Image (cartoon, rainbow, N blue to C red; front, top):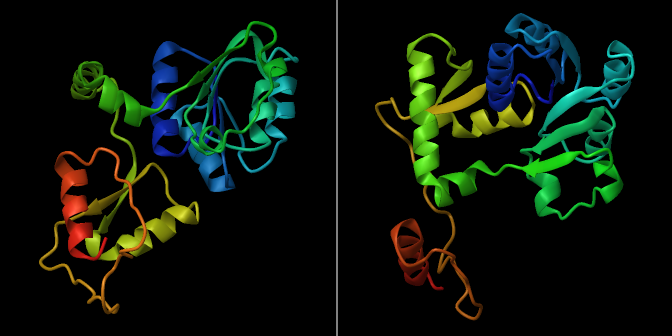
Length: 227
């Protein structure tokens, strides 16, 4: 299996599952330090996620056989390169959203040799299949309790440093997950510097899911502020 962005939250979780299944693991990361971490986490091969050379490295190691599965979160030219290392009857699992929402074209030729292509959107699973997700989480909880899986590495920021947390993630410095904690005595709130209404009254706004919950409260707040 090829796991892209192996030091991210999903990547680290996938490595644990792949180890349990006894798979040979190829994983990518963006820095030498992160690639060293991949090997410590149990990956057998660590490659650069910022270079397309990973494909040639995989084919060299496998004598041009490639891998059976790709777990992808990268975009652009990394997609066809990742397809190029799939064996016949391989599976490409897409968890990134950039190319999906941009309606990027991959070409049916990529699916020759009986390749299967899956797009997995966890947010839609949570919305449309909550019972399935609850069942999956319950099974995972038992695996964590038994020590079969270990909690992911994470970095905790107080909510007062939310901007720094996003900047830290945008710079690609994080490993695992970033967590915002509300465990602080006070949370400073910057005053609004704008005068007048926040929304224009001569345009139309559409809120999906506006009949209840957050969407409904958002609609009322927007109305109070000029929409």
